[in-house]
Length: 166
Image (cartoon, rainbow, N blue to C red; front, top):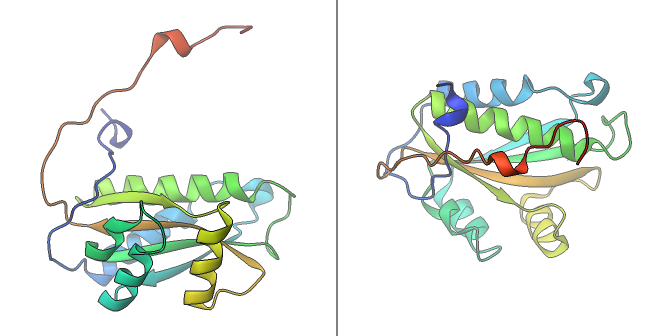
């Protein structure tokens, strides 16, 4: 099966740094995503310092995996680059999924931590990382070498499929 059926959210990581060229591959994959009118409205902040990862891990109760990840990739939506109003979230969602799939391909574990549109999370991240007002901090993707193995559960549910009409 394809990578889609091998990808899962990984929240615990080994104490091992990811090489720079692999991080670059993740970013290249993210930038290969489709976007409305091919605007490519994304920007990224790559965080590797332990102090910054710990600070980000405390920004909301579901962000704890950030503290032990090798790297964090913060995906930002540049409002000045977006060409179609209201589509930036879809563009960034596709970008994030590409990063997660590339992480799987590279033998890494990753988890997508949602920040946007929850205002207090967004404001904390903007302030901490000096993100300009024209950029939306969309998410934090934690990446690292998985600390354990587990099975992927297939999620196909025929009852959720409708043909021609609901």
